[in-house]
Length: 268
Image (cartoon, rainbow, N blue to C red):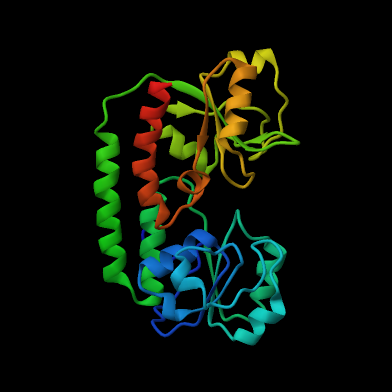
């Protein structure tokens, strides 16, 4: 077994191929990926936030949210596998799931290219290797288009995910890794905190080339962006939070979105 073994998950557990698995997925972006790989018929449970693709997930039972999982509902569905994520799901809940679900598959993509390993992990465990390889080929092609862009100027951008209190992302998050593909960096606000709170100040704004307001988890709108831009005097852009933070199948569209975002900021 090696690090690149497609059957090994994010915490080093090696799984066996299980094409007849009964899957509960507690990660919205991975539910979408499983459907992309043709595995919707194997899904027996999802969270209420697993909303894509809408036509395929509509009939899959909900088992609560990513943080407030209903263990009794999952137990009644008798899954053989539950798919979780280190950032999205809480460890005490995952530990309880391990007490009655035979296989807990742990994921933790940190960079855009980690999506290749994620797709291959899902494909290898659940018998969709060919579909996973097709998706990986499409991802590699889109990634090559992004890397072929001429280098742009380095920029410091503040990516906002919440207000009241204002919150952003640290440099060790997936979102920051997406921005880094454009040569953009997020400022270090608070060491050791992945989603730090912050207060607006002249010193902070002076460090920034732009502010990005995400449409999730807080539902920032163009009105928020317009008002904040007038207040700060620097470009403030509304960005699609799913494109920036959802790994799995949405990450492929996310690479295309990065090219659009760069053009948008250059235009601003």
